[in-house]
Image 1 (tube, helix red, strand yellow):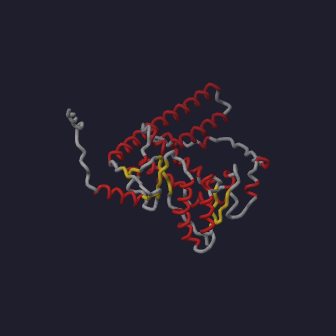
Image 2: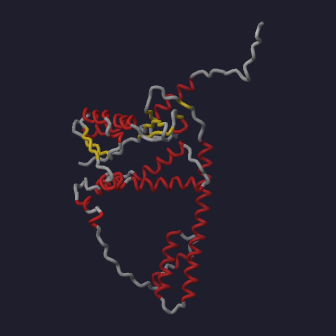
Image 3: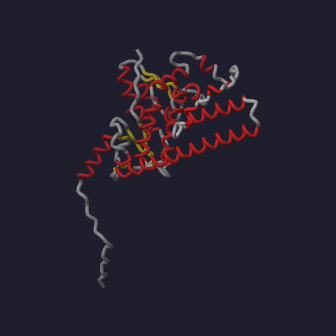
Length: 317
């Protein structure tokens, strides 16, 4: 029986201290966050992820059986502390050879690609709305959206299958090497008849962009197959179809920009300012832990600072 589990998120912000406003209220409590002054992972981040995410989460499924952890050879994955913890907890650490993760790592094969595309779509929505800088809380919300779309069962299984791991098929990797290229047979093109033209597209207002493009392609194909039309007529028809597609795309883009701008403005109006929280002696924190620290900070009495400049004392002779 195959068990499918998606581990809890473990991410970090580029900052020294965190702010409660960076984590939206609808963030899952199991998600964990950390901070990094340069925005990059480190040996400490890698070890904390191993201890706080992989080990307890995989233990729930494996029980007393050994576990396999496949890593891409990043320096934070092969430190002495990292390897020692794996040995102690009966975790088999498999380090991939360099420059081959695009063939051997399931994430690179079928997960990161869709995630990048969904990420670009989410960010593009803000860009079209005129937002030049996405706030941290907004990015966490965006990440929740495209993480659900990319990290699904189909993509994850495709990654393991594409790497030749499950089911075990090493020829899949060998067949992907440059010296084993294959040629695809060409498919003969079919002539287009008048019955292929979808006249309903002329009565839809406004027409769908994909349907309009497909209809224009069919129309231009019919023109090319018709020898009775003169060349100027064909050129005129092609220009008109391109003009219609361009104007239809521009209208759709303007409508989407307006809707996205209104959504961003309404979301920012609802979001309140957070409190800056110093994580003294704590390297990683969860959304639930941040909420607890913020409430403790709110309960502390505020010290009133004197207004204005301090008075100068007169020097006695």
